[in-house]
Image (tube, rainbow, N blue to C red):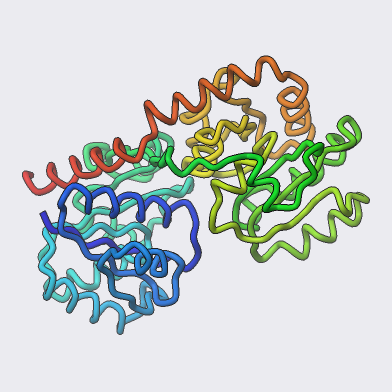
Length: 360
């Protein structure tokens, strides 16, 4: 089997981590692969470090004709049986390559918790070009079906996490400069509206009153950082909310937390939740999208109503003030990652999708 992976992500986010895990796992299984990645991307740098065969292209947009022509050339030289487009942009470029005569079988990945925007290009990409769509959760599959995609053409493959990547909490705190006595609450994600950081900052105002030594750490960066800094000032939370920036070693950062909070308003699955659970960090998250497929409320984590700072605060205080219950909860969460969300399982199920497409 020969597989060509396409990913246009510039930063290291959950999707790029999963592409890396998948390609690395398939390489160990002896699958011949090549990756086409965005020039200057974090995933391209990681591919260099790990020795994964890859090339880089601009991949600026679906209308990037230069990238489409070069992609067609790559397909012609490599002759992959499967072309796996890991985002909508590269699926559009794959559609252009197919129109130029590429005859591989194309597979699409769908990670976002939004219905398809139906237009002629979407119809071509998801109904004509893609032989299968791999959805990151049942929730995302249902969105695709409600958008008009035949359920038989959508497979659910959950993200995987490498348990060997879990770090040591004491070392994590030392690296981050967080006092040992602080109750450290963390969140990781791009600073964009749908991730809900502003709601968490507002909730932290109440949390900090109940737990005076609480510290909120917002890991990430993005367009709304200035707005969040202003909100922290307005709520007189300076020094209590810290912004360490992007964390390339997320496992180390999360291992130092007393609690991981995920206030997303829309989420296909939430791969950073798996990271926290694997590191035996208790989690509180929004009851939205595919998140309830990861977290069983009260058994492997706590769920709260999305968009409600008061609900976030109540969930956080319940978690931080229930140490005996939390011990059992984090053990159950780590076991759930081991049993249901391992990288080996994700790689095997994705490979089965490839095999079924080739047989059909």
